Length: 607
Ligand SMILES: C[S@@+](CC[C@H](N)C(=O)[O-])C[C@H]1O[C@@H](n2cnc3c(N)ncnc32)[C@H](O)[C@@H]1O
Image 1 (tube, rainbow, N blue to C red):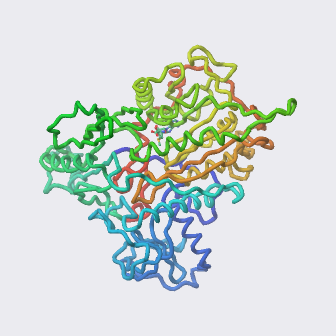
Image 2: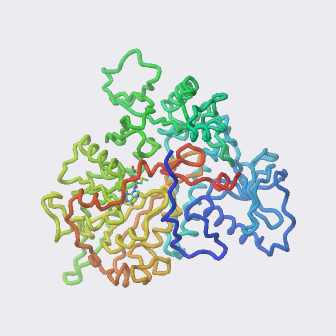
Image 3: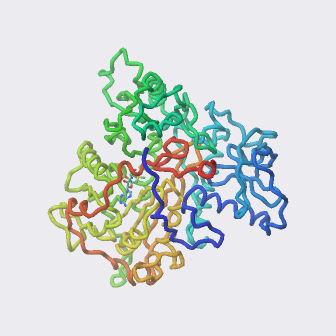
């Protein structure tokens, strides 16, 4: 299982609330929950001195609660006697019974386990398809209608920008409707169930003894609020081929359990073979799921070997990856997000972006170049390449860059227009060819900032402050920020947009002012039935930013870093060592959350 990584090396870059505990990781479930708890306490004027409060209910006692609202973590929030209660698997308007398991008195909230519904909310209209719903920590919303889930996810984006961007409301546009997923069940192309070693197994391992298994262990995902694995025989949010793979893998582990010396994480990754209709075999293997795509057939299988190659098709682009490496997990929504970005990446067609005062004509500099920071195996670079003359994708993982280059070839993208660099995004602009530095190595590409858009899709921790500083120094005309954590995205966008009060300082410790304004903001529902939302923010460079940017730059074309023209390998050598699948951090459930979820609050808190 991949290691958890600290967010931003454990540093909190924006101002700490006085009450904020130093140990709360920014953008984590706990951080987000705290913001919602404080907001509710404020709204209901519940916050008071500890002495004013009624005695808190005993641990493990059962209490009845009226659910007031949903937190951005997906948990229901109730308030009673000056205390907020956090109850998973509920809906606003529910009256429920919950069991107390942890008080956080300094923040006036209590974590509970959901037990039963006494009076259902009018929103509780759906019958969960999963038999483990309310036990497994993977999904939070199977009891809620899909339109309600999308509406709630819009509020997650709104609250993220209100609570974490440090921007005034006037700088934040109206958040657009959440774009739904065409598939709401059966969409996950990757699952990573796991099983634990036998009791005492670690000691036996250390002593070099052969481990003995009393029985076949539970194989599945984390039980909500615990660190225990629960046995999961089916997972209805997985695609059909992945679900078949789950059944097969469970059986294989059962048959071979004595060969395991410890617990393990299993990989289930869908792979698609595209074949002509005539080439379809009549008697398909029962492990193959056949989908008629109109003029061709998709044969879907489930891969379990991390190193085997999995293939996905998006918009007729083909992407090959090592099965264990990162690739977006909901294939059904990918054509919607790539089309959305294509439609928005260059800005409204009629809006002039510069004015030439000497001739009084208005002209729009053409955006010709795309830089895809955190490009992985090239998904956005390749899917958007036709819109641009030159595209560059950068990722710290050398293996992902090897896949990206292979994928560019698979999709017949010319090497002189699409380039990939294995590099730390924090050194990105040192390796971008500008007009003074372009060479034959990069096909003569010149990434003038006013002709360039930067797409950012970082891991959940967001961008490092160093990356934001150099992005502001370079000052591209537009930025499209895609993120699986809208809270760290809001912080980063706050840095790019804010007026210097957002807490980001330059190397001399002077406040950094943003250069951008937010053109549009909305969520995409990459993970239906769960509390997660993918945020897409489109930013454009302000026409006349007053003394914005880093180191006093800020006018159009200023602050540019002309140090480019280095070869990929040179940059790669300077980058940090590539993490082994470092972006794919398992969730609390083991359901492998969007590009690396942090432990849920309740899981982290539970003993
Ligand atoms: C959420 S994934 C996005 C991948 C890609 N955009 C896609 O859609 O498939 C984040 C990527 O950031 C990369 N990454 C993490 N830290 C990085 C850094 N400091 N510099 C460059 N890439 C980094 C990871 O290797 C991972 O591929």
